[in-house]
Length: 462
Image (tube, rainbow, N blue to C red; front, side):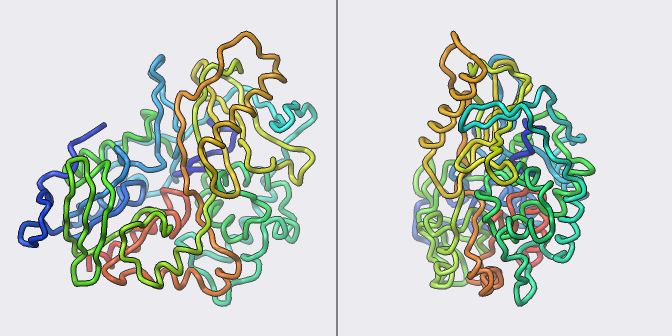
């Protein structure tokens, strides 16, 4: 889910500014002509934007470098041009806690208790197109309580990948084995619905399931989440962009970064040409894949660690002209497989958006795949559902909007976890005047990422 989350279970489912101001405008190697920032932030998604706002409030000068034409990362809001109504195809909700409330209040975005679209719920095997008429979802409450009891053994997981040493074998078990060990079967489909984008849930190390479906999510499941009052999650990032002003460089990529001295030197490719900046500290808030950090002067240790990450597929969108009823959610279930979980890559379902003629879709896979492959698979799945429902005589379906959230859910092998991968990863913080934040360092959950970032800020400003 992109909680603070990309996705909630399917039963709930569903500006361009002048960039790069006077800051380092000269394409010049003369250091006297360059403006120095306290912190340069690579990435303007959830982690990077939050960091920029907080550092600004702490009296620090920042430069935010973002390759897209907007801030917000996985937070994406589609506005239907016909009705003006909005659909979130990324982050949906946030935790109900003081940190979240304070951040939204700081940027003048009102929050309300989240509520979710109703409508009919239809279980269907998308691979075969067969409606599952005798399917009754299991009641997960007791199993979730048992799951919570196991999760409570590792309270520091809520703060990050802070693991006991040696790493307990329970955390390394494939989640399917963990489920059998603690009799958690009735909770599996619920966890699968929340942990969209994680890949093959039953073969995922339990550590990663605990991280994505942690104590904050459990609390929200039972007690409720927060959502934006104006049904526009991107408002948070538009307001942040306005607040940060010309400190934000959109449509900008990193050409090179030199961290060999007491200052970090950055060369950027912006819409207005090459720019050079200097910063006292560097905060990296993008997925730490070697392929994602081209131009960085990565150390041997950084390369060795970052090269171990493996990513998953997570794609989202809204379809128009499906011929399916707009007030209906089709949940993908496969009664032939354990716990009714569909085989991935696959769609999680087609979901009610509350807007006539628009259907939401979310799609996941066990490894990276092209968006073209995913889009084709989604349309083929839709056509099987349409055939089952007897949909004829309508226009061809099309994507009103489509978004790839790759690379998603970075994970490493069980052997690497056992060998202290995350302790080694966290030991990079502060080296070469560089700090790191984001989902790979915490989990795919904005509320949790912001809390993790708070723990870094005193070290960054020191």
